[in-house]
Length: 240
Image 1 (cartoon, rainbow, N blue to C red):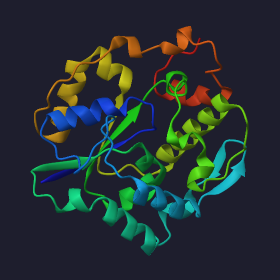
Image 2 (cartoon, helix red, strand yellow):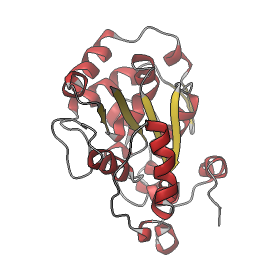
Image 3 (cartoon, rainbow, N blue to C red):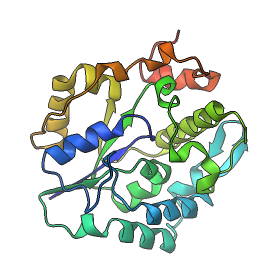
Image 4 (spheres, one colour):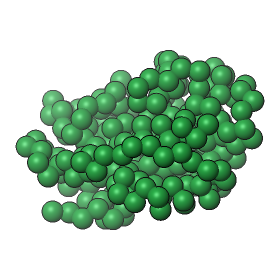
């Protein structure tokens, strides 16, 4: 049996891979919402707040995640995650998994709890990611310190930056694959072929919408921030 999870910020198109896995016979939890999230999410949200106590904000858009990789995992965190994932962990399906964007906020400890599972890292052009709102836009809701601002777009951008840096700071698990949302939409067959080799089984096909890419080009709000630059270069996104 295999266990799979998706790591990626909310509003990055993760519903596409969740729906793909579900269409492929992967058990994704007893109850899913329209975005393919495993719900109810509240125990995982509480786990996020437990782990956040051990992240040190250094000012600006910098955080120190070092303690997360060596300290003992809080027992409360373990209990909350096991409760949240109880239906997935106890299911006897050949392939099981879950998707909830807030899992990204606890990625370091998820990797330590489940080092053997398969992780799909999901990224999207940050300029598109921050156009729409998400539960994780205000990091303080999850106990994470950051430079507070009344600028909604900047708040979303800081959240994007935090989650990207947290993903980068986490030692890669043994089974790990990076997927860009844009590639999944525009080159679906090629990407699905790579995912099938990674996961070890055939995947179903879902309808994708090319018009979901590059929405920032017609967006009239702020969508580009200087602290996006390095991440965009690392992931092959051209800067205007």
